[in-house]
Image (tube, rainbow, N blue to C red; front, top):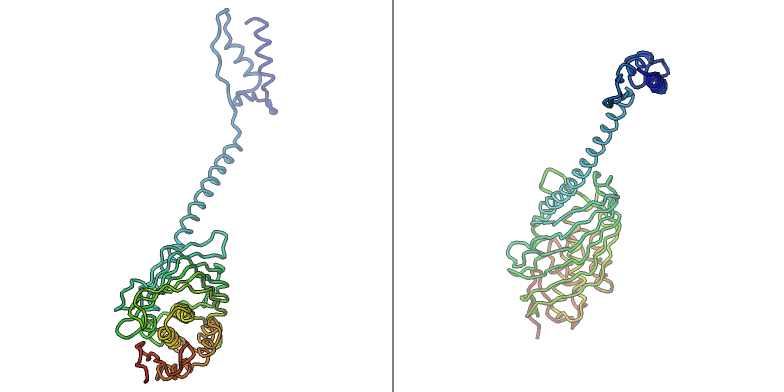
Length: 358
């Protein structure tokens, strides 16, 4: 080994020394041993030497940090996946619950296309809710709604009753038709038991503000004075404090909310000018019958949505008299105020037009 090679090897070992006297490149040997090893490894002749692989020292503290980092990444990924699964699972649970509760409460098949809970909370969107017609009627669905927007905190969904700050029904479509001497929405109300037969209590709602927007009522032929389908555009309807009035402190069941909406739409459609007087009377009589069965608070809410003499008459209907003899009870309250003379023909309780006195 030439003196130059000795100096070179010593310099490399000295530069790579560790604080404890060990070689940083070869921690298993001392600085002196590494120097001798470097010196012996160099060839004595002028032939080029093979490059020596560097000894890399891995600090033991680096291994746990790398493992911990990987564990954190895996856990975060699992949490994200679990959150997405739970999010879509909750949407499905809400959809199935509404369909089941609606079908059980109304005794009519209730369908919902989808339910969507906002990630930010406080909003629930329902898409295309449909309520089937009672047996014996031709329309597949009596009531359809395009979108329903609920303003409700997620914590309320676990309570009973559920407190809903706002409920907006967008573009509802009500079909009114007659079969077997009765109107469909009145028949739907008649099929409902006075109390829930199921041992499990239904979901109850308390709604601060219920809005019905861009509604349409389609009146099918067969009703008095109707030879072809009539489409009635209904102005916006606002109902306040549904399910929170006197006698309903525990909230309103889904069936009650649905029938309040249907009755309000029917009563509002009766205000349309082009409708025949007998049809107006028929709609108002049946809406009054339904309101009477729903109770005093529902009557007030429906009456508030129908201004003028019609609304005033609805608010004074005696629910017990309606239950005993609806035709007699409603004839006195509503007869003669829907246009035409007081002695004009008025439909009876079943929805049939009587003969005109001569």
